[in-house]
Image (cartoon, rainbow, N blue to C red; front, side, top):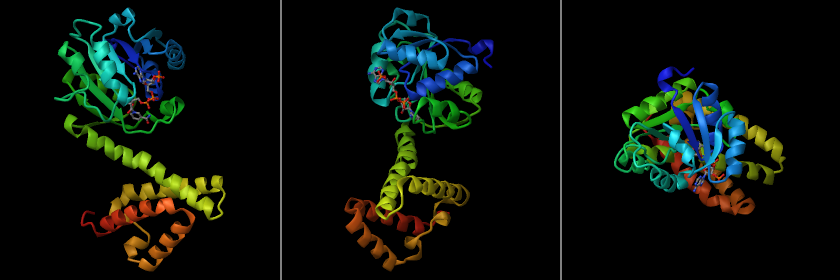
Length: 284
Ligand SMILES: NC(=O)c1ccc[n+]([C@@H]2O[C@H](COP(=O)([O-])OP(=O)(O)OC[C@H]3O[C@@H](n4cnc5c(N)ncnc54)[C@H](OP(=O)(O)O)[C@@H]3O)[C@@H](O)[C@H]2O)c1
């Protein structure tokens, strides 16, 4: 539960999947989320219902003047615009904290996306969950106990760490200048894997396996692969013809792909190149 030192009045801005899930979890943990601000009032109202707290307001509402903490959960693309326009709404943000949940944008450092608030005295930080949240209900389940990358100004970072602890999560510190690379890694591991699985599912279907069956089998297969990767690392969990130097099998794959799914040939070729690099790597 929140202690008296962190019962600051929070405004959540841009309540999408992360905003609603995180908002609901923080409210459950005792945070005072008092306003939900969105560009569409209907979206703010729906989010407030899901979160279980907060008064739905427009982004420019004077009511937001009462907030001591802003939690910006807009899309990455909207963050600079929203930060610029909201920061102008007060002459000073002295004593206030502004946090965002983007993995790609730094909150601290020279290229902080929250610079408009910092220039007016706010302390800024970011807390990015290394988690995949395809909808708000999934977020309520899987934002508990995950890893969060945190960076920014000391006061903002303290609040971010406190929130992570409330969610029984683990904090990892990331330097602002490394955020884009860190986020690219997250995208490769998540959206990249989903995209590969989607291609594998299609190829299975083209080989006569029913889609629902293929999906189920692939989910289990990839889950086991992930477990092996966690235990053994890349080189020792890599299996398949590339590791064995089995060029006859690789040529069969390429011929099958050329006839059934020619669009996957370049993908297979690039993956093969990377598989060979992993197989030859000296890193364990
Ligand atoms: N989803 C994930 O798996 C995940 C995981 C980790 C971190 N994140 C990060 O969390 C943040 C939110 O992601 P999300 O997945 O929750 O996104 P989302 O579901 O697409 O929600 C984005 C929110 O931003 C609002 N928005 C977009 N443009 C806006 C603008 N110009 N002005 C005001 N509000 C605007 C949207 O409002 P409308 O409804 O009006 O469009 C929506 O409420 C991003 O920084 C993302 O990188 C996401």
